[in-house]
Length: 70
Image (cartoon, rainbow, N blue to C red; front, side):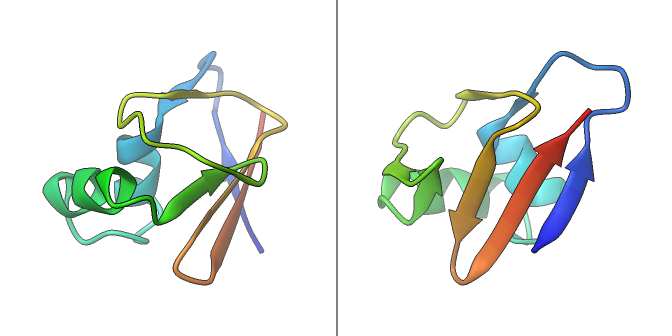
């Protein structure tokens, strides 16, 4: 499990999180992964590319787990 710190921000958009954590190679690839239903947020499939991810949430995709912290 990887941790991602929001570093003073309130949230990060889902597709940006996948890109900055290198789960996706590009923002475009991240958007496709979300659209294809390959990403879950707190165990539920998330289809919104710009879904706001807040501290305390967990994102999973392709065997990668990201815990978002403050």
